Image (tube, rainbow, N blue to C red; front, side, top):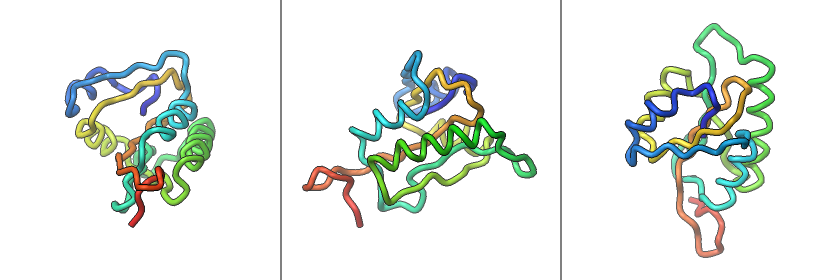
Length: 130
């Protein structure tokens, strides 16, 4: 799930499906809330939720902190045990190219880019846990 500044067309063309899904008029927290309501998170890996962060030596700008906090709250509504782990911007691009697809939002706050690793729905209808 990426912001409007992310090179989504190029990255999506390299994903498993080559698919770019565009959610016009939707910000990242709302997109993550919607996706989190139907997609289980893989709780069997160390870092199932990752967010783009600035390169070493640079700080996340205030608007980037805001989108991360709101997005974290949105995902916590559906998955209370996993938290976003920062991933350097260039490494994020590489990992995103390995994804199933790219969902691009109209998010304008910087660093509004997130990777979600799909898990399995348990018998109780919740994310399967180890």
